[in-house]
Amino acid sequence: MSSVRQNVSSLLLSEIARRILGFFAVAYLARTLGVEGFGMVMIGLTALSYVSLTGSAGLHVLGTRSVARGTGEVDPGTLIGARLLTTGGAIVVVAVVSVLWIEPPELAAVVLVTSLSGVLHALFLEWYFQGRERLTEVAVARTLGAAFYLSFLVVAVHDTGDLTKAALAAVIGDLGSTGYLLLRYRRSVGILRIRFGEWRSLLAAAWPFGAGSVLGHLTANFPLLAVGAILGSGAAGVFAGGNKLVFFVLMADRILGTLLLPASTRLRQLDAAQLSSVLSRSMRWILLLGLPMGVGGAMVATPLVVLVYGEAFSASGPVFGILIWYAMLTMLHTVYTSALLASDGERRYRNVMAVSALANVAAVTGGILIGDVLGAAVGLLLAEGLSLVLMQRAVRVAMVIPAPVGFGRGVMASIALAVILMLLPDMHVLLTVLWGALAYVGAAMVTRALTTADLRELTQRTR
Image (cartoon, rainbow, N blue to C red; front, side, top):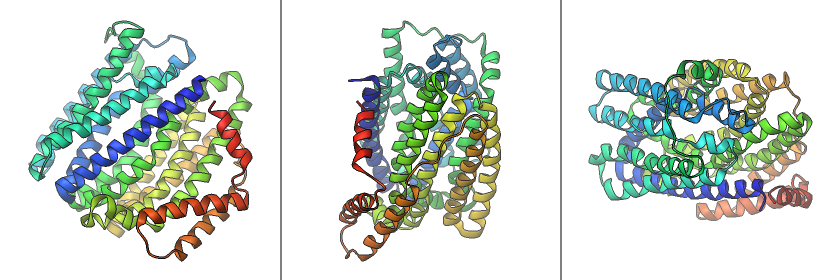
């Protein structure tokens, strides 16, 4: 089995396993804690994501690129030391905010406990194995983390009084994934010796990556915090109900991002034209999958959400129907981001993400004030669309990525899917999804948006 095929297979199986485990974890939390308790836990996890990303400060991207290039310019132990220092600072800030300003106390406790897992994120060596393109280890680590998380939830969380235990589950899950990669590193390289001496120079080198990454993360996660702050934990639970289902759909984006950055870095050094061709084909497949996913997801949104969470979360259906389009925009964004970072365009990346973050804050806040939870979803979608356009323009400075062929045919097949879904009789939502998938494949073949040559090429590329 080639390394490409093995990496794709490992990541695909891992992401399927993680999303299934994560799906059950989210559904279990929602049904056990209710809308408001679920919202508190999601706010805590969002706070953890900010601690983790602020603590990383772009160091993980710098490390991945360095390992992929084989230059040895970044020592893993020194990079980990820098991440621990910055993570510690972020946790202190969260602790102060939690104690002094967050209400109610239950929410403050959830945020504080969950944020402690940032230390484990700082020790997480995913970036090292990603740079080495040893993605089987990454896949196993991710799956272990999801399994630990779900197992602890089932054992420890039984009612609305177990909010703190639900927060502690994040720590338990990260302990499993981080511990595994530390053991793999020790067996293949040796003991990881953490050093703190060069953290300033590393942070200076990683700052352009870090600024862009933090701002990009703000774009994705600000809406939940804004909804919680303006409308309360219950509204945050409604928003999170739709948003978390989109997170499961973004399994493809996680695989895409993990593969594209090291591969793009390597191809950019060898053959820039080949890189442009690969990225164009990647966008074509994203559109072929994303268009029907957006159309079909919007049309079955509410019954699908109710099936997962229960009738109490029916208001989350329209949120999912809007944000399902966010998934396709994010995957296209990942393609351009990989191209830009592989071309040493981290400063342009930072600038784009700065403008995008400001647009996100304005659009989401305005959306909440105008249209409550649904306004937040629309604002997030509009901001991501703007960010995609700006990123595409930034990439054009370094390279030209040809427009994917067959876009119009994909639109025609998606319109056919919408008509077929409207004509279907009432049935269980899963049967509707199945018939819709079959209808789209048929329409795509008829319109030649998808051909047998495409399927053969996809098979050959993964061998």
